[in-house]
Length: 547
Image 1: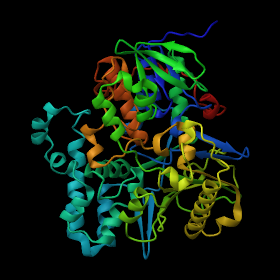
Image 2 (image 1 turned 45 degrees about the vertical axis):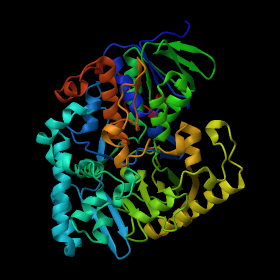
Image 3 (image 1 turned 120 degrees about the vertical axis):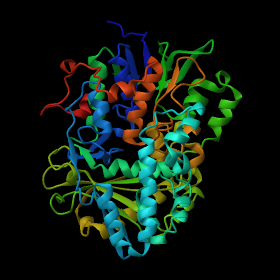
Image 4 (image 1 turned 60 degrees about the horizontal axis):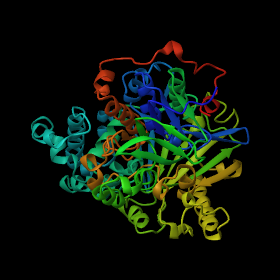
């Protein structure tokens, strides 16, 4: 039987934003095709395997708010996936361990416990800490009552209904710290997890910090079976409800006729038609390359060109022949060499590798001690990451891999990659002593690697940056000026992260269908038919199911 060439909707890119959109469209009756240029679906939520021993996450490191009524389980429930993903809770007494010179702080579950522990650790800042946390909690409480996207006509009403959000939400975290007269140590501890959105306090919106804190203070979790289970189950929903997910199918062009999206052309030359096209791909490449400036207003072209991308990450993946289960707490480590949070970010923004290289360590085989594809008993799978500059010149690159440049043997690139790898491994040994002599697999991924696999501008996994001037109403909504063309993913108003892009997928499907699906989801509506699903079970391999 020949492959179908006409669909009700086509989704470009199989990240969790695109897959969530597709799952909601298919379970609401639209024959939906998802196209992915990589050989496995999932985008930044996919995993890769090495030596038939280790599995490494690209982006699913830990999730917040995954209790029974949490955001992510609720999104999954409405497409028929209730109970299909088991979320393993990390140490509620310290899911993140913040390490500064002379100060180690374990972040506990719950706002009240967090507040108590902060005041105990930083008694000189007690008054300012209470004022700061009161503001953050007030902002996030107000934000919970706001339906995205916010329209200009909503502002007068929100001034009455969400005063904390309207007063502080779109001001910088640095402004709030100044208002609360916080000292350097208190600022550093409060902002230590800002790598989750890749901005320093001087540029981060208060609402971003408040939402991230609230998300994880509701509990930090990791999906049993590894990060691939999330895309794999969504792929199952799409395929079992009349849609399809095709890997190794790169999209070259979004076809536009008479001002409307009508389908796509693949890099192979094949054309596929649909009256709805959703791009979960990089925002700049979507508009400037796949759509083309000739189909866009000059204002849109200028705005897209001006968007700044978030800082990218450098990641080191280690396979160890020692088992860290039971030897270390079920926690992530965030290590800083000073209390200066701003300096390393400014270095990266100025195109310099920070001299004070802070980093994040997470151990998947400790977060999920049951799944032996992550690492069998006696072994460990560990990841270290740090923010780095995006500038091609830093990496010895000229055009970038998306333009066809070969970079693997570039001596400047290799030298910096090796130097950073060694620095992060050395740093990790300060946190978990003795691991260096047990490394049997080591590799690293750079921003250039990220661009190679995802075509993301600047090699970022966070989309356009989330600074005050690019947040909220200053970010793109799912609906575009081209009829039938919609956006999903990290660069939209719903922001980045697993929870952000999944909620954004619901928002994108809402725009396509002309319904407020989020309200229906919150009311408990289930669109998918669990009886149609085949995913899960002891012999199910989410990685194979995503191909």
